[in-house]
View: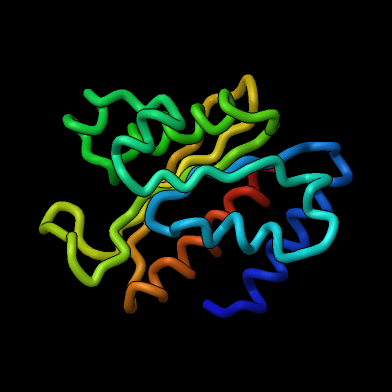
Length: 161
């Protein structure tokens, strides 16, 4: 849970994407652009980072990524179905070859018994392949949850690439 781990994962990801000529797109909600910032903190990232979508509101998820209103109403923004639609939308709305989406409850409020604070859903996808989704439950304060979400998103991208 530290910035060195994030930087190390980002640097490994940058190398892999560059070697394979792949572009990345990210769709973020609870992390508010933190993953995009991490990716673009290094010079030359435009050779492998295409774009980021910060879709904090449900309306933004619908307008920017094509998430269906029905999915949001039935499943909730923090769900497997929503992150799968988000990651698919990130690929459809970009030139990227790979994408990740993140939606969660960073706290301190907003949690429920079913989805407590620290619940974060992820989806990773390569073009022409099915999405892979995963849910994690992180501990700590708002920044801790968001930092761990960025770390997990990067790890999932490394596994995908």
